[in-house]
Image (cartoon, rainbow, N blue to C red; front, top):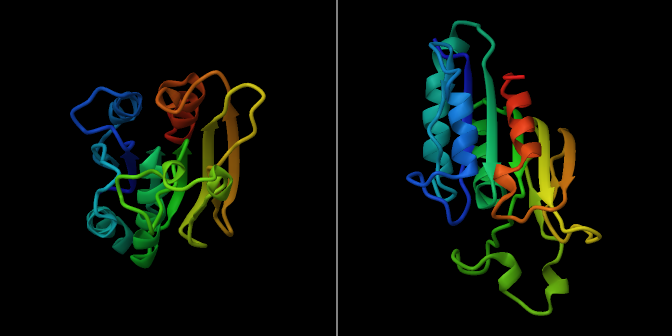
Length: 199
């Protein structure tokens, strides 16, 4: 009976066939899978949140129905952090399955107005209009949220603001690494291992 589930979300340019930092993080956690610990294969950022929520909630339902505590963890990089996670968390909350802990690795905001293929920072000038998009996560859909983001030395964070009312929120700023490499950083790897209970 599954009592614990872990979900990994990929970035905008990543697909499930690629060997990425996010996929390597998934492999480390997957090695600990067992009858009670389900490690979902990585999902692409544009995965249907409602269908994925239905699947995950269904896998946890037998344990919940038996009165056993169930726990849900997520690790989302780039667009899966800015687009998929808020929608998935809302869909799971509607099924009575909020995330215990989620880690967002340099989440990128996806505009609900502009075309899907166009990231927020490329949509409008001047850039000051979109410097600090807010990734909004519904109250009660996650208990603890950790956000890891990158910024070059001496540069202030220009985006990736996250609101999660009622959640315990921690953030870590990593310097010396860019967006495409942050999922391979030691800081992100250590946080994933900590949340997954590997360390």
